[in-house]
Image (cartoon, rainbow, N blue to C red; front, side, top):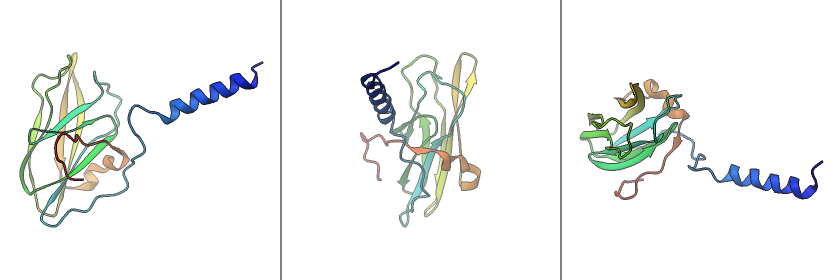
Length: 159
């Protein structure tokens, strides 16, 4: 039979593990953010999937600037000026990644949102990032199941 000290120690260990995850998972999607007048909003998300990747993160960039490292079931949202932009997976340093990361060039319209899904596709012993973009929020409903990922603050991204 365990004594009170052993039970208290086990409870404290469980509580410390539960409250200190590797990534903050408490910023659930709460709704679509407003779009500043004359600007565009970009949502980039990675839905939950059973496909495991070597680092289990998608290092994303917009217009060759670091955006975020998206884990499974995470998203980021930024405002950008209307016009042509490029979304891509940053060249990774780890083995097992595609040496030629994919990118999508897309047109952002003023006062509208664009939604881009990032998804790993196994390709032999490596995987490729698939990036699909569109303007219909219902076609990208999986975004609403994601949690917010931190933006890369080495770049001056707007909130």
